[in-house]
Length: 287
Image 1 (cartoon, one colour):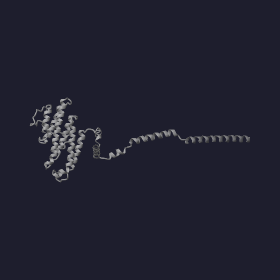
Image 2: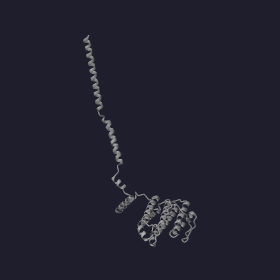
Image 3: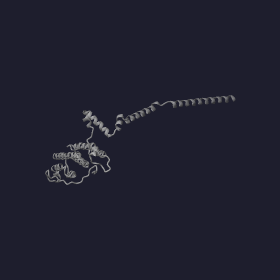
Image 4: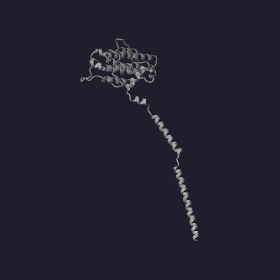
């Protein structure tokens, strides 16, 4: 009996040992599996993220040239472009193709800035801006810049390719700028303003002739209300100069376009058919 019990005990111990070894082997296998890397899936994700990061970085990267240009103000960029065009005239036409034509808004913005620089160039005077020779010598450079730029824009806007309303609108604003220029004590210094008035008068006449020609050819249709507004604007400018500078323009307008608003034909001596009325500028009444 004791011998049989001893045999049973040995078999149970042997079973327990085998079971323990099996568990240890299973745990070892699990440990190996857990420690084994998963290279394909993880590396695939890492590569995709890396490529995405590089692509994103490439899109956002800025050139050194662009960064340097952004540090420069508008006047310096303009000087660089002008200098480049003067030194290499062969590229002028190509460069000009990328420069958009001026609009009423953009051109008036430039002219208003130039007018501000002109006003700010006046030397301090406790009695207000002076009109003597010394003051004129201090502001003459800015005055020339303003007048020269205004005339260049006027030359553009009075070309036959510009729509009539745009043309007359610019001339209206430009002539108000001329009115605001000071009258100097020395009449010789007033030659710039007088010359500007004469040039503007010629531009008004050119605009009237171009529009009348296009109307005769049927290229435009303009209603009488629009023509009436042009007439009032021109008459206002003629009145503000006491009929001295824009008589020719008024006569040209009456003879070429007056029939559209019922104005009678006038001769060169009688140019007061257009009734002057106050008009409003798109940049505000700054007179």
